[in-house]
Image 1: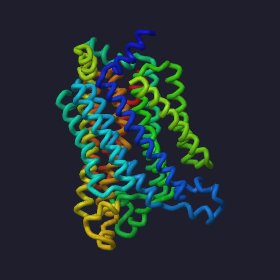
Image 2: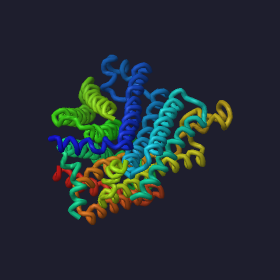
Image 3: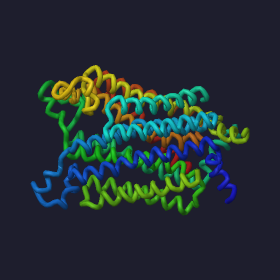
Image 4: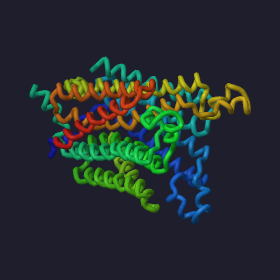
Length: 156
Length: 156
Length: 156
């Protein structure tokens, strides 16, 4: 039993891997938060997409008027999809990067800049900030992922 | 050579990791199934989006009438996107959780409840079941992922 | 310190895992490329979705006319979403497959066919090639993922 515990905690005992675990969990939780923000806007703006979601508002035309798109809801949904498009590569490439033996300080720099840039991106999208706020935060996180991918390909 | 095999099977020899491997594969296969369900509804409802997909139905207006949205197709696609939004965090956070040394029984509880809830969510979306069926199954899987994230952050 | 480095490079010293690292990084970079292709078409077709993105084109109606959908932009976005739907299962199931102790030659065959099929899929979608070009390349990559999932479930 203790042998198994040793095996299971081996990777997480590595400092770089532990940093990867922390920042990956943070960005994935941030991405999950977009679901709650979407739900919040759907409920406050009364803008739904599934007929069964508006059944409690009454029957027929009374309920149907809430089956509509809303600019704020669509904005959150675009932010959520952009998270998926950019956080999925970070999680995959970041894992391989963490296992490729980088210096802890270099790895932390990558993970922290990515995480900070994606949090900024969300604020830039939802407030919204004037461009190039959103564009720059997107580009910084993108560049960090490319940098990690380069290290993985060089090592593997 | 045998040294390498040992290394490669080391993680998968760990019981918690083996459970993670099984349930992650099941939920990812379930998510992949949504592609086949979408294809099924596109073909039976004759509702396509790419002009090249309807070329076999004839030329000009004859084919163009099949370039349309269909309520059932859109419903499956929403279920597929909801899978992506929720199964991606499970796969990423679940891996880190499995490596954080949880008790096997606790880990199994997390993996099984998540998997069950996401399968229920798909049925609730596609049948569709009246609310809060879909909402509850979504929330249960969401809470399980948050619980695993908490364990990862506490350990790392 | 050296003990930790040893641990961190242990997995990446395994030949199958190194192959997984290489091909996963390639397909994730390919998926990330779709963001740049989308940006290219949005800018050349002048088709944007966020009001703040067209603010530099002037005020009022002058800028609003660029808030529109464009067939080429939508095509790239569908290709990007299809990547997410298919590359996410590959990254997750592929990792577990790489750790399940497959023969190197068998693993390379899986990784290379998947990667080739997904690159073909992108060309088939963007050119676009007549069907069943896109359909076949999608199906081949899908079958490779199912084959890896079968091996994982048999081992775990």
